[in-house]
Amino acid sequence: MSEQAPIFRGIFGADWDRLLPVFRQHYANRPFSHDVVVVEGVMDVELSWLARLFAPLMRFSGALVPVAGRDIPVTVTFRSDPDSPSFAFDREFRFPGRKPYHFRSVMLPAGGNEVIEWMAIGFGWRAAFSYGEGQVRLEHRGYALRWFGKAIPIPLEWLLGRGHAWERAIDDTQFAMAMTIRHRFFGQLYGYSGTFCIEETRLDR
Image (cartoon, rainbow, N blue to C red):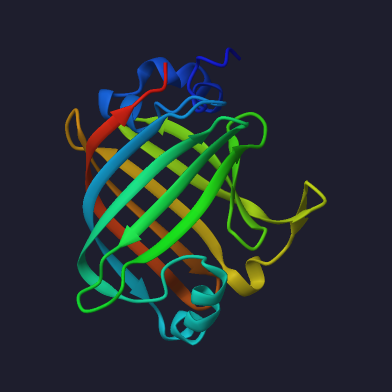
């Protein structure tokens, strides 16, 4: 794939040419560049009683958001890396009366339509991307640990449940999204959802 092609062109494959304009902008970042895309929105964050028990671990590890809330202002910055094909997220949640909370992660292509989203502690979620009827879907493909640069699969669904997400176009610059983690026995453990508008696209040419 050409370095000038977006990172996600290869992940969406033939569906890339069918993406609506909002998703073309959302996933415009190219590998090995300084590209930046910024979106602004509001989100709801939901934690089950079980997830609340793990909130200190979430905060310590920087994974997910350990506080529930409604209509939380959020800024998400998507950054490319000039030295890799990664797609980095910096999610800033501005809860009332609290210091802004940053949830940062990095997605890397994992072959075909799959990516691994790596958290700061070297824990990863593997997901498959698909597109249809104006909606991007992410389906759970497992968890992994990074070990000497390699992704080692770990079967933790019995403990952590399975993650799923979707993004739906609203218009040419806005989209809605939701992510949930559901457990086979305990139901929904965690979830967040919201709407976003693309505010800035800086492609390093």
